Image 1 (cartoon, rainbow, N blue to C red):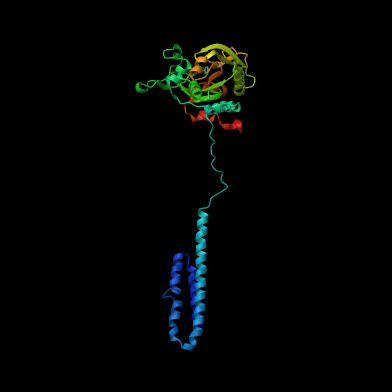
Image 2: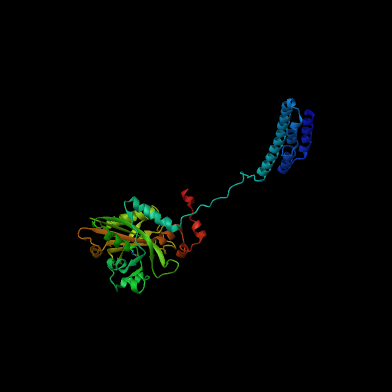
Amino acid sequence: MKEKGLEIKNQLLEDIKSVNTLQDIVELKSKYIGKTGVVTGLMKNMKDYAPEERKEIGQIVNVIKTEVNDIISTKEKEINEAILNEKLNKEKIDITLPSKKIKRGSLHPMTRITEEFEDLFVSMGYTVFEGPELESDENCFQKLNLPKGHPARDAQDTFYLKDEVENFLLRSQTSTAQVRAMEANVDKGPIRIVCPGKVYRRDEDATHSHQFMQIEGLVIDKNISMADLKGTLEVMMKKVLGEKTQVRFRPSYFPFTEPSVEVDVTCFKCGGKGCALCKQTGWIEVLGAGMVHPDVLTMSGYDPKVYQGFAFGTGLDRMAMFKYNIPDIRTIYGNDIRFIEQFDRKDED
Ligand code: PHE
């Protein structure tokens, strides 16, 4: 029996040389330890031996069986390992390759300039107050002292909705938010707000667009004077356009303020010496402002004998054009990514 075992083992060691795949292993298993395999055959022959021999023969057969099993499973392991290694080699990732650069976006210049104004005013105790772009004629004009038929309405020719909503329009100025803020304030106490937002007029050329952005400020309190207005605007302009900027008031007219002023700043390009940008005057007009008209206060429930206020409004597009050197207002709304990319956040790093 021992010789038989040795013979089987040698045969197996010979056979195993040509085993390369898992399929070969399956065949090998069936040849040796399968139902009709040679080792299994040895067990079946057990009955041919005398009962006293069987124990010893059984032990020998078991040793053969274990040896054969070990040889086959070692080979099977080798093959499995080889398969895995080949797979790992094929699917290898080169982690030393540089990764794809993720492009950082940039804020649109209008978002930037709006946030700059908002941050400044919030730091001075104002709140940001926004109104709807679709407004009533009443809020856009009547409560700002421009009754129907008032000639000053022409300067703000805008987009009206027809027929059933005849009294609604796309607001032509953010001053409408001032009316809303005064009316919403039930205590009729002090107000300090800035109102940024889109407004609409029937314009379109290099410096005027049918839709643009304004920011207005409104302060209502006791003992408010033109000096407060001037101080506030000086701080605002120095912060936005540079510390050397000076502010000049010129008398003007707005129906909702009295007295009214137009405000110029020293040209930030030439510092006031005179250049092409300021048309050699040294000054650039930047906003309209004034003391809130007593009738406007009265119409929104304030007593002008107790409360005074000032208001100002400026075009954010114009500010952005000055500040970022944008020659044509239409590029601001052109949605060209190359334009916006010029305002990346390099300077904030
Ligand atoms: N609303 C005015 C405009 O659009 C500007 C302005 C605001 C003037 C507040 C005076 C006071 O031209």
